[in-house]
Length: 358
Image 1 (spheres, rainbow, N blue to C red):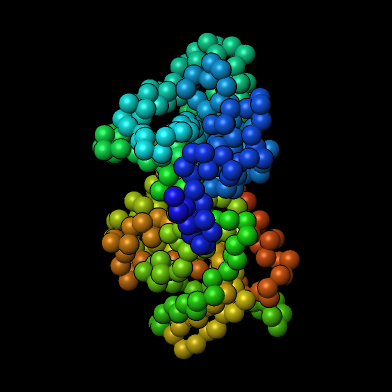
Image 2: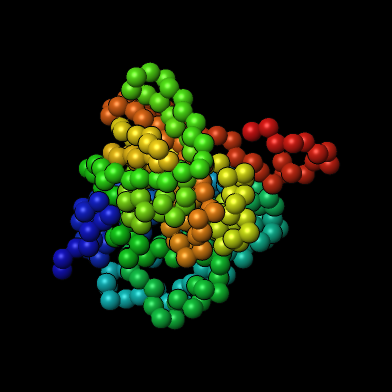
């Protein structure tokens, strides 16, 4: 069988037993292959460090249907993970597996329910994980969503069930093979992209002769034309991937679909950061090439997936940073722009009005 190709043209095959080669270094007699598969997924698609991914997995005996838990404190999201590694490529994931997983997620609806599950799990890894990440204290204010991972696709019965379960995301063969980005890829996109800024002010900040930043409101309909959004290769240097149905993603999509909010979008959106080796400012336009996106993965992915709702009024404040290839500033900008404190629900609990200062 000819393997599919990842977004950067690198071959990947998640059919069994070829899939085992992808995480051969994670296989261990004390670890189930499904656990190694999940760790590999968290490393390559959530872009977690290896130890962070290992710590998020609890796929062992008496795991209560929970193979892993990862908490994104910036987006106030608890991701509960379930994994099915199928040896028969012809098999599919149906509604039975998904219904069972939906039942598992109900254990997270209340602190009392979660505590009961922890008590019944005893010394199982899942109980230790929940206690280690202090999940009970976060349950009231965080959103819980489930992610079902498999190396096969969903079947005709599973698809309608998934549509009725907005808190569950399915990640299967097609997604894994189309979104995979190899470590050997070239992160930058070389095709020039032109953005229309006619009638809008452009702000420029120069650090030195080769380093500068240009900030402008750019049409979302032009941003979604950037190469590498569909396969995520554009975001190779981003700290995190799109992370599924987080509260931030949901809010972005709702804003995109409400066309009355398009003109106001730059007022409540943090913007997108693009690093490029070349940025040219012309009369009413900006041209960039040899670029990649380091902040704005969730936004661009949501815009790309909802292109039918875009209008010319929907513009995104975009920061184009011109850097020489290999500049150490690139990794610093990526790290700092992805680790700013997020605004949590409890920040809106005060009875006193205070205008935004950020």
